[in-house]
Length: 403
Image (cartoon, rainbow, N blue to C red; front, side, top):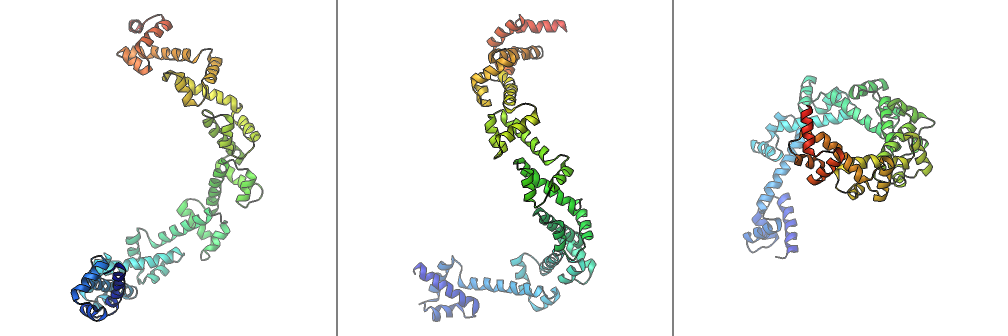
């Protein structure tokens, strides 16, 4: 049978199997005019992925049964449900849902109670909506399912909802009006109990966090006030109260920290573009000098020298140091000679020898010292003698005699 025709048979056959009580043989013979009952079953199985028509009907009836029981459980007690349905029906319900009638009804009722509490309803209203008569019984079931009392759940949900509104930038007055069943005093008390701060304090915390993000992007303070829909220096006063510094001081602090970190690897103009964005050159260089006490170019040279002097004794060649720091060999040699009066090679040798003086007395072999200094034994012997007038072994003995 062609695939398209087989699918048509499947759809039509399912309608008869689900909506009528006609036997499979009759559906096969009278509706589809198959030559034999087995031919219809084989065609149906091919179209349905191996499921026989009889099994499809049974599965459909089971699902229908479960839906009917669910609807009854919303309105009737478990005892009445058991008297209406057979033991086989009840067992089928458990197999398909994984829950007993009592467990399913508890879950459904608690969901209904949660909806009432989420809208700010009282514990009594939630209990009545869930269909429980006794407050103690309701509280016990609710805690069993959620791990908290109805009042605690409501307060947590309300606090979370208010947090969301405040983070969206809603004024405190508008947030309070959303929960008109509650007075502002009660809402503030509830919110403080859950978060440790009142509505206004949390609003200020949110404004401060958002301002920090904008200030890190070097956004002007007047533009930030416009973003929050505030006039004057309202945002600035809140920010200073929360952080202990003005927006300008915080923005300059971020500019200083980011610039110092980047100036080791990049030229001042590249750093300006990365840190200050669309702000002018004058803004970046003036504020950097005010914060650090030197201009960006001088600070880059200072940072390069500090990093180079740390790396030079650890690397084999000056080219490796230049590659790590992102500067030219000519510039690095010039900066180091101006600062120390030595070439990078001489500085590396002196730094290694000073370290060798500290290492030799405490290490078992000269090979260990060389490994620590990242140099060869011949290099150590030659330069150590030039530096101290002794070979490493003689220096070790002199240290032992001194002790």
